Length: 360
Image 1 (cartoon, helix red, strand yellow):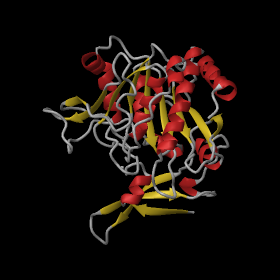
Image 2 (cartoon, one colour):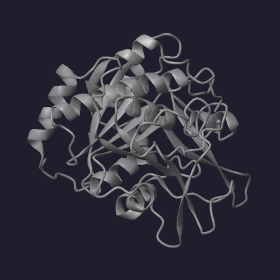
Image 3 (cartoon, one colour):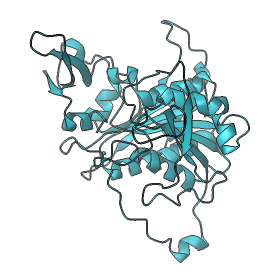
């Protein structure tokens, strides 16, 4: 069974289009922790961070970039040098779209969301955050935005050198954390995944992170983002330690909803599902030329139509149905039947995920 919902504020929130209340600034670090600082397994690693939710983090339902700041926080805490270049406005659903002409402006954000100001204070780049808009003369509140893929391409093709002084490519591109999972058919539309694909297309390793929300409240709790970000930092550290950060394929990491006290289950190596969890539908207005864009939501148990899932190792099944963290490899090569050129790397990463990866 499936049904459609008009893209009202509630449905838009569920789709990741919806807004960020901020918690108070973190409590001061105890003296004991200052005397014995936590290990920094990502020290020396340069990370470009982008997303498709923007860098605004201003909406009450946390759907416009709060996950990006949680990911930035966790990576800097682990010792990485992080620079953010993200879309100026929400760009959910843009996939791998790029802008073919005009001007891009990368404008630094100086007043960061409350509680996140000092997260990267001791990093070489200071955790600089840039929003990328279209047009000259600075980015205004209503400026049109660059796409997720635009931001990564700009960063790798001169933006990081000009704005952060980096020589050469970053060691890793991270995208997200997205407000809502990117699973099954939604992966084709995902700007979070599209930005990661833009990175591996330039031979830079990339990981795309997406978190489930609280469906009962149509929101994306900070706790989900934080749990995912901290897991992500440990995952990246493990991959780095084993020499498994590769540009042969990107990794897509989806995290279940843990806001009600449920614990996320161990990571599972999956494929992208061949069914749908959500889809676009179009409802005609009377007999005229206009059609309302509506969000179709699949309910569990469908055995027919576009909602049906046939793969036992589908990301949607293991994430939504069983509560596991899901990890799937994503490639830029859309040629059907292409042999796996990095078979040894793929096998090694899969083995790490299945046997050695950190537990939530």
